[in-house]
Image (tube, rainbow, N blue to C red; front, top):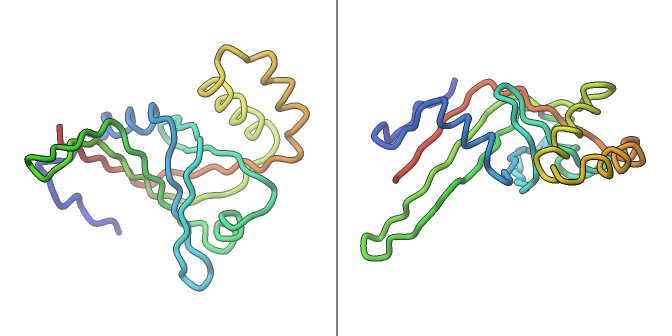
Length: 154
């Protein structure tokens, strides 16, 4: 189903790929519309080792795509450094493949709290109040990660 990493010398362990996915500040979601047109969206997210969660508005391009075709890809990039004399770049990246779906109830609430803890850990009480006031105006998507790979040139 998924092609193996071409540059085996650059492949990182699954644990390193998970750490990179867990600790990166943002990622890029790739979806496709019903006519096959690709669409990418940078976004904030949380990763728990099996699932990626993100929140968004109640409608929009990425939601239309997910509802039509739930197969998605999600990429994060860690540390990078250009090496001009070598015409190269040091980098680390991880790419996840999976299926996306909207979640509700306690799972939605828990995902929003995890996002709050990642991005605003010093404002948890205020964030809980904010979530309570916005939860009905927010969509939360869960990506069930089926395949994860990572590469690095360090």
